[in-house]
Figure 1: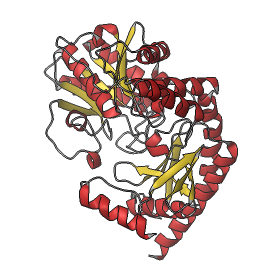
Figure 2: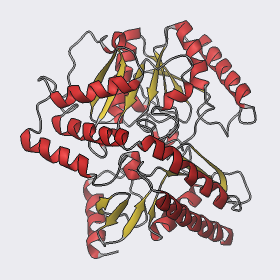
Figure 3: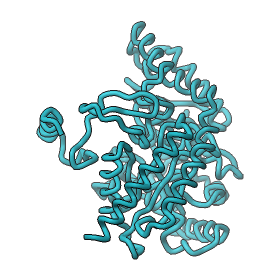
Figure 4: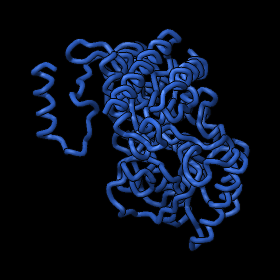
Length: 437
């Protein structure tokens, strides 16, 4: 590590809070990127399988996006929502048409956290209730309200909350009390749990907020159809469904454009939140939902930075590129290949408990070899060894023992093969070191 990198790390620690965690024993300063690769300050090149937490969705330095940002910045950078904005209206038109929600409206924010906050404000105002249903092992952001509905204790620094939050089963298929059941019985058990939970309330629950695939929770997902089955129960009680698509949206799962579409038998969600990938690194979030709910606020509300001309121009260019180049189809094809390769590599490794995923959203659960005990140490070690070999990945899960693999959706077959090989080497090295310790 150069003196400059060490100096920057020291400066980081001197002025930023201790809980603002950094990856790696010697943190990286990434200086530039192109396609699916990034470079650090020392000139080392990495294959990027995490995309700044699933945010560089199409590619690094995508010419269409950088051109749109530059051209819009040369005209006007900021106006606020108090003025008409052509780029904001145009992106809203695209998103409402793609959302699958009839008569939809969009409110733009600057992050996924803020999008979920806005969705819960809308739902609780519409329903006149502060009761929220959330999934165990969930993550919805770092604001006070989002922390209040986050079921993953690693990301919940306070028990205080503006909500009465009720946690239900279903987000984690392969652990917990229902793990041994068939998919059909698993769904039935989770529905029964939901019904039972609703009997514990005072009535009038506002909404269920759920990630179709839990992101920070380790890319876990229920069987297809669970949220459709939940919807039958929710509808009987007038409870809204908020689908948190901050990580699953825009075709990342390959099979679907939105994660909720794996649970579509009883229609779309009432509200859908999005962020991350749509801006390809620019700060865009938002909530889209049916007009009756979206229009329900009785007081003034604006967004100073949400829907800014520059970010909307980036979102339009990025979305156009995604659709024109069928990156959802690429995620399905190349992601399918990648998960097959990873499963084959993991088959002979005791450190790997499970490889799961859909499209380019793949989780690898790690355990202490010879046990079923999650191993955060193994995940940290694999992260370091993969970085040494030129591969960047993420980690998460309830205990931090899950590798999170989410490359840009333009990933090529050759890059998938290369990344799988590098990760396989890192897993083998980690198993060897753990066995020797």
